[in-house]
Length: 276
Image (cartoon, rainbow, N blue to C red; front, side, top):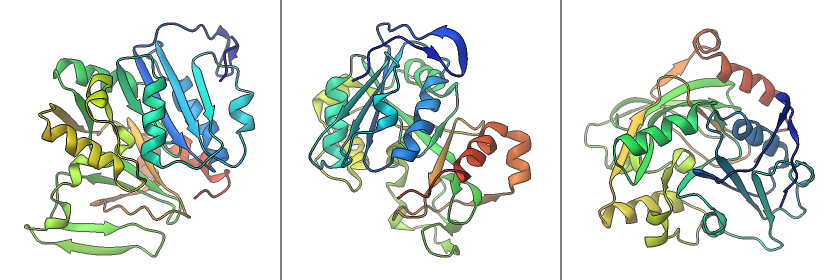
């Protein structure tokens, strides 16, 4: 755990002063040392000041970056044994001090206004849970940007995976995507009270989707909205089995012009080692 006060590198002379958080950001991780500095930058640049970041890491060795961070808002817990993604999420939420929990996956980009916008949606819509129903993507395999609307389940989709990209056309009654809009936990924001009523199952495959499905079965109020302003960028890395089905491929010149922060993140990512 880090607990010293230190100036932010992106805001020289501005000390990090711990305060009671209104949002606890949680990140389960393992073997992703190169990505943790990018994840911390997303957290440190949030314009919602009263937040904390809880990282649960089951890597073989503790992260040197996290241990030397010196940000009093960060709780870093290295565990010596391997844990499922669901178990790591449960441990992180148990450590959280805030009533609102937000997921930050270690390989994604979150814009500075991300937490503020998500928390506003949670409050204004009187929801127990909020997530993105459409979002931007970037593939390190194809060096390609895309956009995926989870509520649009039929018609042309591009199949993204570690393999060559293919184009598919799904029928209107395509059942495989029937519950697709409730998955993809990288953009989950919810109340700790909701989690306490039904924590994550101990698994590493769709444990986030099962968590939300169980909450909806209990009557939870879900709010979702499409990201058309570049709040977040979901990243496909070369050595994982994640698949996505965006409907749109975006030229980099267009992204650079209208969403320069996304393009800048990808430029930094290109210099990082390939991650699983």
